Each structure stands twice: as structure tokens, then as C-alpha cells.
Image 1: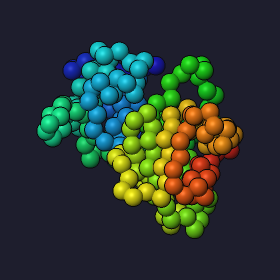
Image 2: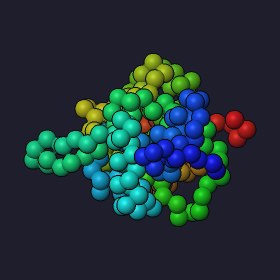
Image 3: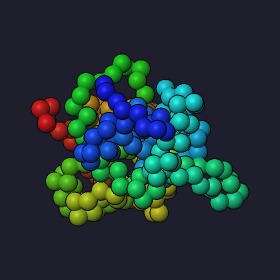
Image 4: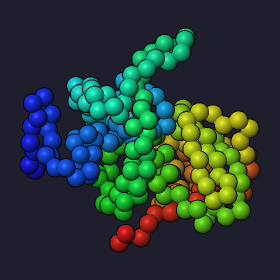
Length: 225
């Protein structure tokens, strides 16, 4: 791979094309995964490390600095009593959401890495956004709370649209409490819901019909797409 180097030492493709200039900002290894981890709200450094367990602290610090300098990420502080320093996307960073979603859809038919590869909470949530099939949601109007390894997300399906945000759902029609691997197996790999419940890998509450509808809303694209 050929790079030019600016006076500051930052690598650049030296190409005026918008794609190349975008990659100058987010093309370094781990950069887009940092963006993925922040799509649904601010995180502390330790939370980012938990979502990206294979990145070293030094590399994560460098990527955060690079993204800050590029105006993609900024530092903030949680309100008291936590008062912890967090990282969050700027408006420019949030504009990358459709890019990440479509990249996730494009990559969903690629071969899987080793079986011990991580499948984190934010990764599976992005996969939900990437693989939502509007036609399957016809006539469904429902809200859900997803509880994934103690993290809570609100999902809303209405008029063929799917909205997802971090945080508990007010008065949901149903709740799903599980882990990312189990949820992925139920959605895309044919695992049976009743078997998963009996094994204790998932707990569901609320409207059973809407729970089963939810599990059928996400579709892998054809392998040749």
C-alpha cells in the first residue's frame, strides 16, 4: 500500500478523490470500529476497550487522538455523580452512521473469522440496523427493550421503519435478555427460540407474537451481493 506523508507525519493517500480523503481520516486500522462503538452514545475509554478487546490501549489512544483532530470524535464528561470522561461522536462523526451500516451489510456475507472471534454488544446492534428488512415489518407497530450483557437498548418498529437507541425502553411491548452470540444464532443461524429459553441463554417477557415477529425482521443479503 502506497502512502504519502504530510509534514505532520500523518499518512495520506495524496489523492483528491473524496473516497481517498475520507480514508485519510478513517482508513487506519480500528478507526471505523471505534466509530461503530460510539454510534449509539458516549463511552468511557474502558468501555471502548471492552468492546474492542483486541486493540491495545496505546493504539486505541492514538486512534482517539486522530479522530479528535479530524473532528470525528470529541471528549465530554458524564453528569454527576459519575463525572467520568467519555468519548462521543461529533455531528461529523455521526454522519458516518449510514456508511458503517452499509459496510456492515456488505460484509455480512464475508467468511467468518476464527470461532473465538469477538461478537460484541455494539457489533450485534449495528448488525440489526444493517440487516433490518422493512418488508418483513409490514403491519408491525411495537417497541422492545433489548438487554445485552447488562446494556439496554430501545428498539421501535413502526411503518416499516426500525429505530434503535441506547437506554431502557419506556413501557415496551416485549423485552429480550440475552447475549450477542445467542441473539445472532436466533436471527441468522436457525437456533430455536424455545430451545434457547430452556437452556437459559435467553429470557423473554411480554407479547410472545411480537417477540417472534422481531426475531424474523433481520435478513442476510444474498451471498453474491
